[in-house]
Image (cartoon, rainbow, N blue to C red):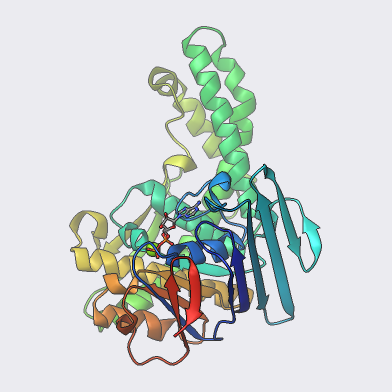
Amino acid sequence: MVINRIAVNGYKNLSGVDIFPDSKMNIFCGDNAQGKTNLIEAVWLMTGCRSFRGTRDRDFIGFDSDKAEISVEFSDSERPQKIDFSVTKNAVKDKLIRLNGVKIPLLSRLFGTLKCVVFTPEDLFITKGSPDNRRSFIDLSASQIKHSFVYALSKYNGLLSQRNALIKNISFGSASPEDLDVWDIQLAKTGAYISVIRNTYCNNLNQYTNSLYNKITNGKENMTLYYQSTVFKELDGRTDHEGELTEIYYKKLKESIEDDIRIGYTLCGVHRDDVITCINGLSAREFGSQGQQRSTALIMKIAQARIIKDQTGEAPVMLLDDVLSELDPERQSFILKNIDGMQVFITCCDRHTVKNTSGKIFSVKNGKIGGV
Ligand SMILES: Nc1ncnc2c1ncn2[C@@H]1O[C@H](COP(=O)(O)OP(=O)(O)O)[C@@H](O)[C@H]1O
Ligand SMILES: [Mg+2]
């Protein structure tokens, strides 16, 4: 997948941007607060995902603009495509989105069309951070290769909020525990499905990360990664989410009702699960050095990209926002070597951060982007 043209106007501080990236390597350099991350974010939004830094819709539009416009031309292995997006200050809810000229109601409907992997300095904390970050990583990565997974996740979140609201009502005496059953039946079904998809993804990811980690440590250390379920003891080899797995899940929910009511929310389920990374058999989160934790994070990102390439046949565009300067030269060259063949966008303050590369270099200054 290659982005051939990016035009941005009025998105945050970016104005009059109209660039034709190199099909391989693109480096965007500029001082802090000039608009580098804004550019990466504008491209990322066109993948149909929410902003990786949590920007809300109304903050898309530049302080001095009435309208934010983003347009991206790209080609996948089959054909050239174009996404046009615009939103005006007075009608933030009425976004205008077109894919190849055809109107699309929501940005999220674009999901799966333009495939990108974004890597920011925050991602380097994925191993060390909270389970929430790791679940998000797995959920997004698995959705990138199985788009319908997004709907299962959103259904589960809806059901979980309803169940939690009911639990509160039960503790206030305005509902009874039997009322939970309608939610539990559906939660069990959706939760079992999510567990199977996540577990399958983690097993697949583990094969990639294991071999990449082996390479980065020259065979000195071994990395393993697995999905840790709060519901199931064993998920490997199981795909019967419509059969026994749903029953087990349902029973587990029933067993914890008393505790749930006492605590005030649903204690077990896929919203409490985790992804465990080990180095030489020991938890990288608890025992890993900072360097090991960074390597595991780095490798999970490379693996995410490789899986998209291998399973969808389309190499994603790699968006590396300010991350190379956080890495030592060895890890820098490892990442570049292992995403070879993919189109890359790198942002950095110092253009010498990236060594010996061909491609295009752009300068980012006060929201304007030009060649150097
Ligand atoms: N809605 C907005 N309108 C105009 N400027 C904005 C808006 N939101 C953020 N900015 C500006 O964008 C700049 C930060 O851009 P960013 O892309 O994060 O910089 P960097 O080059 O360091 O990655 C800041 O100067 C900030 O004031
Ligand atoms: Mg930045």
